[in-house]
Image (cartoon, rainbow, N blue to C red; front, side, top):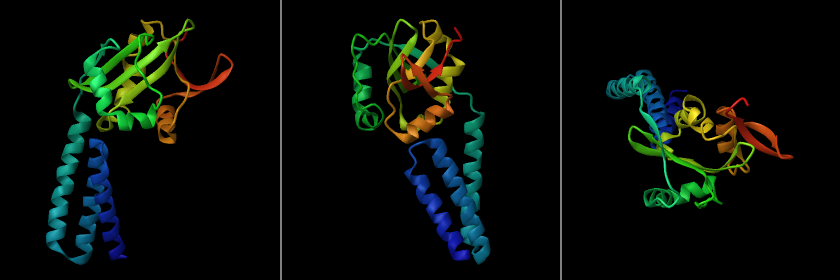
Length: 208
């Protein structure tokens, strides 16, 4: 039984090192250190208990700090010809293609902005708005480090007036290419919806 506890601790620490999201890294690392501490106690191995117990409390401190820190978000509009955004999308093109393989920037994209999170570009949002107030998403890409629902909540809930002021009544995805992305959207309140006779995944922003 003690051996399996050690294997579990090693697995959790290994998973933490594969996390590109800071919050997920902290959680898995904290759990790994906690289980390793139990492992050390079971073996009467004081150095293992001491080292991992200390790391557990260090991780716990940073987790509390993360959840208590109030982050600064800001929406900044851009032209689809903006070179900074094009370089940003080019830098993340491999990961971006997994979520939006058909993406392209053009002058028809009448809603385009990026979200700053503590003054770093965390998300790029591009959509085409039709006459009925449906914003058809072309890109809504968040860099891996910030995939913790905060950006989505900010865009679609906390500061949704930005979209409403531009005539958006509903945000619509014509296609979702990854099951994990679909689950992510459903967590943010997107649902299967019929738009113009076809079924899409969408979230209503404005009541009318």
